[in-house]
Image 1 (cartoon, one colour):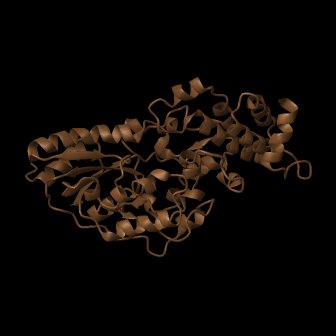
Image 2 (cartoon, rainbow, N blue to C red):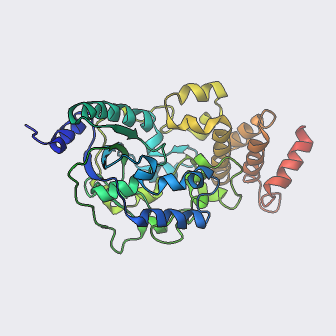
Amino acid sequence: MPTSISECLRARATQEGFSDVRITSADTSPQQAERLRSFLGQNYQGDMDWLAETAERRAAPRALWPEARSAIVFAMNYGQGLDAFERLGRKSEGVISTYALNRDYHDVVKGKLKKIATWFASVAKAEVKVFVDTAPLMEKPLAHAAGLGWQGKHTNLLSRELGSWFFIGTILTDKILPVDEPEVDHCGSCHACLDICPTKAFPAPYQLDARRCISYLTIEHKGAIPEDLRPLIGNRVYGCDDCQLVCPWNKYAQRSTLSDFDARVQLGGAKLIELWAWSEADFLRHTEGSAVRRIGFERWQRNLAVGMGNALRATQDPAIEAALDARWQAASPLVREHIAWALAQGEPAGAGGTMSAATSAAARSGQQG
């Protein structure tokens, strides 16, 4: 039988489907604030303005909640055992990042954490606050300090037992708890994650320039995707897993036992042309309760247009061209720009294949009103 609070926490975490739980102090290293300042100073955040706006509170957990004394950090496995490189090879298929193929992890993880937090607050006579990725709390450095894993050269958290296919959730408490040893870096001389990145989003090991990251471009970025990066996105329509897929530590990763993370049929393995045919109502229905919904229908169409343009270049499939043309009239200006670029990918070199998106859009606008 568990005898200590820490042992009881681990038992409860297992009951709720968490794969691991570790504890650290709410006092973090000054390195955390320094790295954040460096990231923001180089504008690597792109148009994620909220990172700069909340930088002071992000610097340390106690800047967010002064009463915090301990951080209990949880890992929840979401691995699917999918061969995403194989999926990327099927050029006409729309590839969605593994983490977003089913229920929104914010809802799943937070729901389970709240149960544990309620129990802990009662038995420990403690105040608690629950966090899953949405508050200005830098959870990866906390998880590293707690020994849950280490931040790899791709900046994701890695575990020797879980690889990188896991979500992080945190409970801050005003209770002082025994802490676990921090994890050490096990990346060694490997740089496979840096080499595989299609858009070269890593200026150096342990640094990420979000402005070039496919996950940022397809999820967080609200405007037009830079033309020079569009061909590199391939058929990725929401997020990117390449730096995780190539990581040797993921050979130890296990498939999640939680049905919440089983891939939805509508999101896993669907053809680009099928996803493109969705109306906004279809999009809202098929993405209900999914992380994909948060980008909205316009950005979803923008991403699909880029994927279809890349598929058109690779396959010269006239059905893709017809589908893109059919959406031109009803599309927003943002989506039209990407449709025009996509259609240009199917034109032979010397006959408009090098036409810029802006020129192609103007020509098409004149033809079709």
